[in-house]
Image 1 (tube, rainbow, N blue to C red):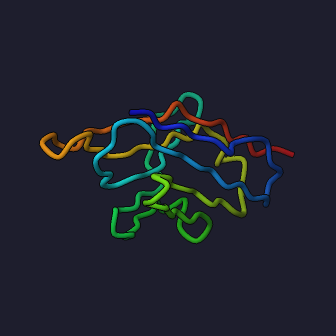
Image 2 (spheres, helix red, strand yellow; image 1 turned 90 degrees about the vertical axis):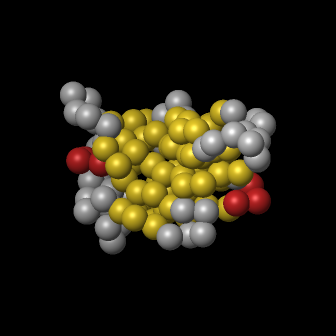
Length: 120
């Protein structure tokens, strides 16, 4: 099982970016998916999560600016980020709870991360 994140880059303050993360491999089902971020010198922190049914949670820093969504058929989770500011600069990691077979429990998987830099 692999999670491949994409969509990061350099953006000016006030700008927008859309991150994508696609799961591939031997997958029976995917439970919750989410995005986390880690800025230099800081711990990894939750940004947003979404359940298989579409229920979402957001960090306070993301509320009103970021939107998490998913396409179950494509095994993909998205993070639409708007009104970005320099404090959003970080490596963004996707996360998913994946069951590889019906008789196996959900396991936690992490993507490799994509860099988001907000700077003028």
